[in-house]
Every structure is written in C-alpha cells, then in structure tokens.
Length: 303
Ligand code: NAD
Image 1 (tube, rainbow, N blue to C red):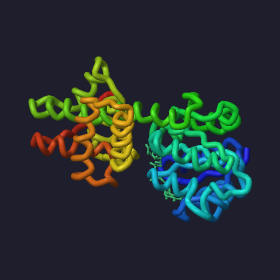
Image 2 (image 1 turned 135 degrees about the vertical axis):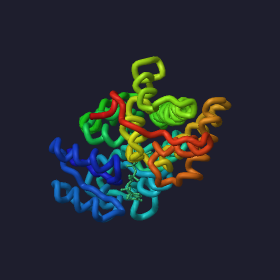
Image 3 (image 1 turned 120 degrees about the horizontal axis):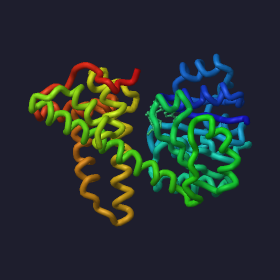
Image 4 (image 1 turned 45 degrees about the vertical axis):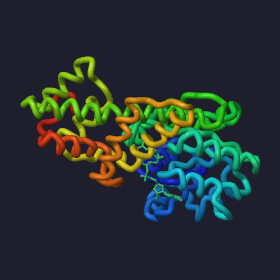
C-alpha cells in the first residue's frame, strides 16, 4: 500500500520502519527533519507538510504527542491533512480521548475523509517488534481497507463503528497501566521501608497474585536498575490519566481509585517534569517515605 505517516517519535518511528520493511511505500512527515532523513535513508519519501502527505496518499497514519497536534495535523488550516487531494482515510494512532477523536471525525467527515481511530498499547518495545495491541474504531469497510497496514504493527482489535470508541478502550487500558505503576511503587516502597529487598519483592510479586505490567516489565528494566528509561514520558502518561478522568466525568461517573491515581500523577508531573520517563513515578513516593528503591534486576528482569 501507499501509506502516509506523520509523527515519527518514540512510537511512530519504529512503526513506520516496520511498514517499510513490510514493503509498503511510505511518505513521511515530522517537524523534526532528522527523523524524516533517517526514514528516507530506509526507503521512505519525504513530504513537506501533512497536506503534502495527504496529496500523495489515500491512507494517512499519524502518531502524535498531544490532542492539539492531532487536531492541527488533521484539520489545521491550509497545511492540514484535510486539504489533501488524494487522502480518503486518516488513521490516528495517538491517544487523544474520545471527545477529541469525535471532533476530528466530524471535521474530516465534512470533507469526505474517514477517520479511523486506532490508539495502540505496548510501548516502544511493542512498536519495534510489531506486537502492539491496536484498537480500531470506524466504518467497518474502511477498517478492513487499512487492516493490512495495522497488522504490521501489532494485534488488531475492532472495537466498533462509533467514533472515539477505540479511544475509550485505550483510556481504560492506560488507566490500569498508570495505576499499576503507582500502586507497585507504593507496595515496594512500603517493603523497603520495612527492610525488605526490593529485587526479592519483585520476584515474589511476579510469582504471585500481585503480578502486573509494572512489576513484570517496568521495575526489572527501569526502576530497580534506576535507569528510568522505559520510553514513555510522564507528560504522556498524565495526558492519558487526565483523559480517562474526563471520560469518566463525561459519562457521569465519579471513580474513587481513578481520582486518587490522578492526584498522585499530578504530584509526579509537578516534581519530575513532563519529559521524565514515567517510571520515575516512584521518586516522589520514595521521597515522602525517606527511602530509595534500588538493587539488582531480580530473576524476572528482561534479558
Ligand atoms: P513522541 O513525543 O516521542 O513523538 C511524537 C512525534 O510527533 C515527534 O517526532 C514530534 O516531532 C512529532 N510532532 C509533534 N507535533 C507535530 C506536528 N504538528 N506535525 C508533525 N510532527 C509532529 O511521542 P510518542 O511516545 O511516540 O507517542 C505518540 C503517541 O502514542 C501519543 O499519543 C502517546 O500517548 C501514544 N503512545 C505512546 C506510547 C509510548 O510508550 N511512548 C505507547 C502507547 C501510545
């Protein structure tokens, strides 16, 4: 397929590279020229704007860091995808929440461009290996048309035809991921305060019923070695937690765990900054407890 790809960051770059390796013809754009150059070296064509991408390709994928970036790229004036001559489908791989997805859907629909909402989960490692969970919503026929491309980046789930429904799915998932990160941090900090070895704790949790993605992946790889380099920014995690809370509120729900988790992530972004890796979430919890969690990687460390 001829595919446009906009936003070549931590997630977008490896996804675009996999599409090139799978013999799709890619036309790429990012505001950072160096990442465009790297993909051109791998066989992509460079475009000069989102509109330029959409002038050349029927299907345009995007992986962007903020709601505003998705809105601007899709519909932002003369240089947006919306003005493209060939584009028929805009596939947004970013996490933007169902309200923004629905807004973009409406603006594009007025120009006969179909939006497929397609947020992903599974981190940079999943993007590199093509093992992401890909959650798609939109008209079924258009979903079928883009599925061969989505199959290259991960396991694809059709969530429904209602605009934004894949975003709701993604926010449910990321609320759990955000909760696992801070809940595991609190559990391990409690143990360390009482004199337990954190590496042993993680091994026990991973062999027991406390197992979760933070204990399985994030602690062995990025927290216990104190590298804090898992590849997902605190700013993006907080964006998703805020979106999940907004989603609950818009549904008339008030949820206790989500609100406590949301308050804690606001402390984390204030203390560690939006550019920090989200595994640094443990630092304010350590500080409040007066301990530092460190040590060997434990038996379950990613090899
Ligand atoms: P990132 O910040 O690493 O990458 C974003 C890219 O978009 C950058 O290359 C940036 O230069 C580019 N960009 C920004 N504004 C642009 C514009 N107006 N036009 C063109 N390019 C523009 O972010 P990321 O970690 O790759 O995340 C992208 C999306 O995927 C986010 O919605 C995030 O929530 C979601 N996500 C990330 C992860 C992860 O582990 N990093 C996992 C799942 C989902």
